[in-house]
Image (cartoon, rainbow, N blue to C red):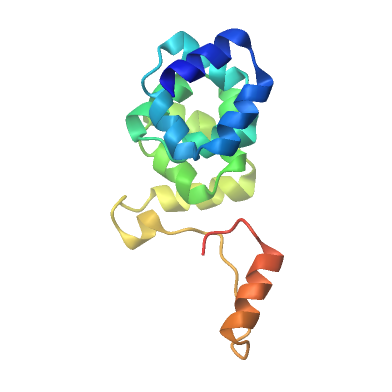
Length: 160
């Protein structure tokens, strides 16, 4: 897949990029991207949408996440973070130097800033460090089937 990505990038083939995402999971794309050189990586990242790039960023290994972030403007990274759940953003921010972390946090909406600051105060391997602040509550009288139906209706992309 690594060679395929390099070829797609050099040809600027938007259709092939779409096919790549339709035929592969983000984790598989992330693993292939780890093997490409920095120019190919940068060109690939600039040729895809924020939604697709965020899907790769959130599943990539921490070292590769940092490599990706180094090649992107701060403003784009802030937009990527808006596409991701706060707990995934916290995992990434926790690996950054404090000065850079603060700069990213300051670019976020106030509500996200508050949640992220709270989560960053917990050690990474504690319940607080791995929690999500985005959750849905349901009435206790609902059956499991009704609850799942309601969850799918309210937020089809939430973590279950």
